[in-house]
Image (cartoon, rainbow, N blue to C red; front, side, top):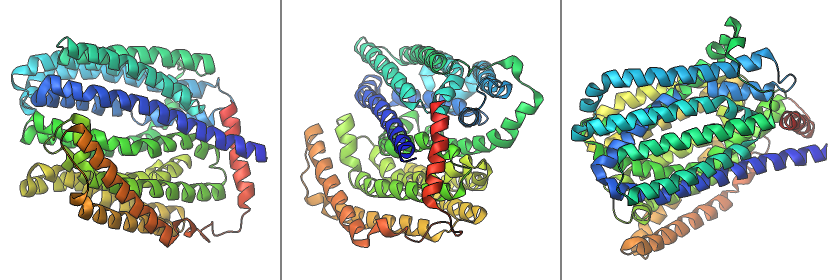
Length: 523
């Protein structure tokens, strides 16, 4: 049994490391190429590119929750991987993705004149339309890839998927640098995106077929009863994705509509930097989801899993968020090479809210592992309503910065509600989680205040060298203060006595959960 536990822990660590390593390569490619794209296109045209990518991102998220449903079905379908239901669910994902891409191409072509005026595309509306068509081709190939990617993730082959993505990103990065050197523009960037999407889809299909040849989507196996996956599980997950779209993509469209595409592009640079903070915990949650599904039969095991995951997420995200807020301006200068209007502001405003939302990711995967994604529905609707309701008033009061302020406030308020609602509905004690989040948040706020106070007295300078020095000094001070404060309150002992109410053998639950995860992973 001890070997089973060890092997499962190693598998989770290996998957997380692979996901993080692959994503770091993708991020490194973006860090190198995006400043070149910004310099070549200029602020206005770069803003248009950001808006086009946002449109495709919105469309890609309209998957009826089938992305998560397919991963869950594969993770639970190890007893009979060749079952008709499993093939039907994978077929649903494939069919819907292909239909969506075709429908989107028709609708956008018909409505493009109106869209161009709404987003203030001006003289480059024609070029933007051609680029949009290429991006829709990439959307189509992304939909074709989706079922086979679900096979890799559901069988815990995250490393394979991660390294395919990393390799394709390197190819795309080389092509982008070449394009910028020869003076390419929006259409060329979109064509490269379509090419890399087709390459990634082909490699993912080959890898999934080699690893699990019996996991094959079949449209003809779909029955009426299979639609329950969409009605009972997928739609609720889709609601979560819809809230994410409102809280991430809406800002770009509002800024472009009320100001101009250049303003939206500047804010987007700050949001992209913020994604760096989200990489390790985000991919750890992806790697842990199949393990949580496998252990869902043992409630006691899930309770311990939930508290440990929340504690580790909070311990990482709290100090890192404080460091990002304090170092926002030099971080942007280090990346782009110069100050960019609004980018640092957006980074500092959104970072705390996104950190809190990520900490609650442990509760999200527990709810989904137990087959209750509906627990997220109310908080999602609250987040959307708060964001929509506060955007215009804050925009009127504070100008462009009011848009991310509305998003941040909506995320924080709805996350607090979700935490309370999740614990009430699942009968889990709330106090241990509140202590974990509360102490970490307090330490991070104090560290951010100290770091901001001493920042003017720390070394800084012009250019990327001066910015790098400023980032190192500000981050070092902030993280040091956070570590001292967390050590003082002895955060790691706050979970004592917070096990489930009924007396259960936690070691037995852990062994049983890891045995289930091992069986799913081996298949």
